Image (cartoon, one colour):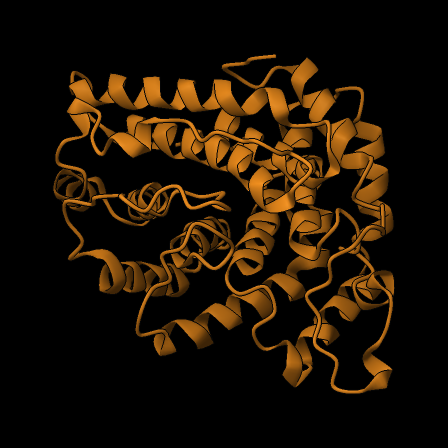
Length: 337
């Protein structure tokens, strides 16, 4: 199966996948530090909302995807089931338990920055629904993660440039949508200032280390997408010219070759399907930022299509990818530039 846009049929397929695992508690890979025997609890006890989908962050971005699909197709066949899920799960009592988890000293670095960014992305999406009561319910948890960004970013002298969960450009990029949704200019300013401090001097990106064997993000392209999202066009375009100066010639070549996936039952190797989808998302957004008539637009659009074609057929089939890949497919197909 290939697709160039999110259709209602495809949205229903993705929704059914997510609805099948957001409340599936096991198998589960907790990111949990025990300070004593009292902390040995089940995933559902620790996280009464986001206990499914194999791990907390995948559950969060599966909720984001369901909210996005509901906004895109409010009358589609899965809409009632999504609303029922949100009514049952996004309650003040359960949000309070999720917030309390963060208060423990052992949880200071919990899901930083990947899960932080996705939770804020979810909150932003919920605020855009016609029925945005769930947005108000989740607001205390979202604000707790926004405050974590506020506390952490001034301390973070250096960015993290890997292609996995620890990539800081991804965290800034997702948090930016929350800053916009909440009209928090101060938070947006902090994200922008941090991106400039970390990345403004970067130029002639070689991307020679991509992909590593368990990447699901392109460290080069997510940095570019972060800067596109946070900078005005008159700031971004000169920076982008310097950052990828030979893009028109499809260089660095490694950014244009979809990753090869040899074993989708291996969770780390299966990350590479996500790399193809996240590259498609970034290439599509970057193409939209380039001026009409710029030859690089078509180069970027073609790269997006090639990566999407490599990733879309493998959304389901093995739980190591099935518990998360659909979210990145929706980013690649649907995220507004």
